[in-house]
Length: 119
Length: 228
Image (tube, rainbow over all chains, first blue to last red; front, side):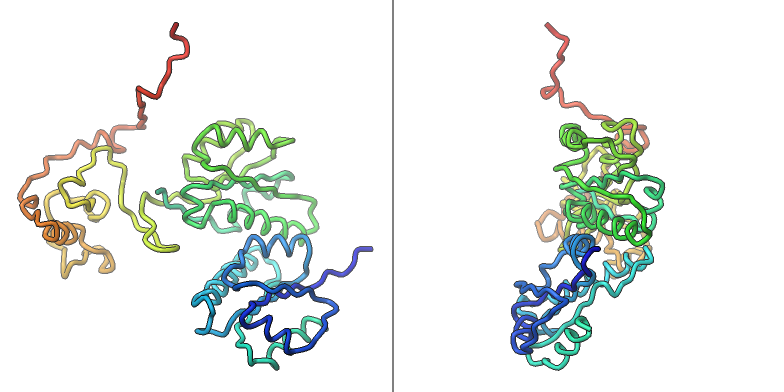
């Protein structure tokens, strides 16, 4: 029997990962990866991870207008939007990828996201 | 560069739906710069197709590979050499020339275009491209301040604007700059407005598509291997 696949959190080091550290949660069903900027995330890498390792990927970038690399969060949001369009065309579940823009003080929002993924 | 746009993923799926062994071939030159058909995009299409087949419980797998250029036989032969088994179908992400080169090299394998070839243009900023050349075979940019009226004037006029130019915009679409306004402004900047007085003679369109299929041979690069 194959083990149930986990979720993967890709957390921007300037927002999402800071929230993860503050939240003090130890996830059982999710792996956490700190990334330098959400804008660096590539669609082919996400698809590779979804194909081979994870059931869902959740990206947390900086808050709108407050990206450390200016447009990284916007770039990521656009890539995810385009990817979801392709997933829809192929009748695949678009919920396998989530994208959130959070600032480092939006702890409750982050807790809600991680608790939902863990449940 | 040759500007390309990826076909909708559903159209690509239609090409491969009856195949078991699929190869997605990316092109590392123009298609990669267009962010439509390079190594990353080949991997992306592979991932999308594989997720789809997995979701449908089908035992089909897509693989991907890419070459520096799909329009050069050496690079395409490299892709073929790396195939342990020939694929049932290939999706080529090169321009139309690339698709045909892949087809020539793989011969027995059906090759389908994963992208649409659109025009010869420039990469103005990340993700923004505009048409700049129609490959007419007889360049006149020396006479027009470096702005091509063949490709950038909607009517390809060679001696000044038509009557539809208004406020520097084309009558076809007011988002298009009038090429002859651009030419005038550029020549003025270069202090070469006298060029506007030169009459460009009737163009010989035989060097363009009107002359049939074109080919070019650079003699100094070609070696006759049968010559003693």
